[in-house]
View 1 (cartoon, rainbow, N blue to C red):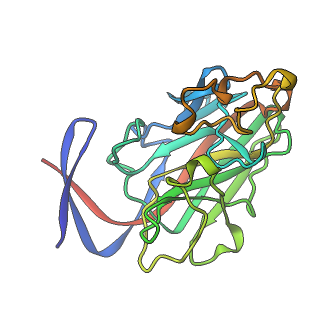
View 2: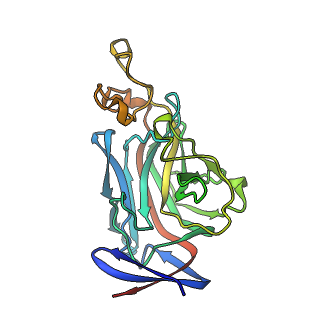
Length: 278
């Protein structure tokens, strides 16, 4: 049996690779150590992204109720020519890596993307998505390109309405009819790709969650913008010495707004990793 070692919240673990897949279910109502996050910005909706813990409260039925209120941070990693921006109301890290600052939980880690089912109840209050949709999203490292692929189940959008809405999303890379692969902005071509090839073996989701995609970002004071500025809120390293576009004033009326609430969230998945604390 193959094995490797990892650390989660300062606790060391031995991770054994199983010969057969194990079926597991994450339940938000009982596994409260699993920390969901939401993205805000260093300058309101703009600037660098900041990971905050998503708000979690108990309702009168003693159910966990997760909520997030926009406008949210503007993620331009997949935007092209001012379109295709997204926001991340609910995000979860599910694999240890060197760059992710989100807290991991040993109770929901190393989920294989294939044959994952996501279900729960969702509600939207004062929602105006400005053309975006609320969809399930995940990211994994493509073993061929060695770049991250971002996937959304946009053919299974989740309705945000005033009453609780029951949803179920099925995730399976073997069937791409419900999926779309997000493009990368030109500045992120070394990190992301949308060139999908079916992996020869199952792959793990490194992070997953629910995003708002796509929407446009319109800048104001365009007559005063320097020519050097590019048409995205992201900035590549080679432009770090010029004024950064991600802090240029924008028309905030074009951003998705409202409060999103979620409860009874469950995620069924398979994994071939078993953790043992050391």
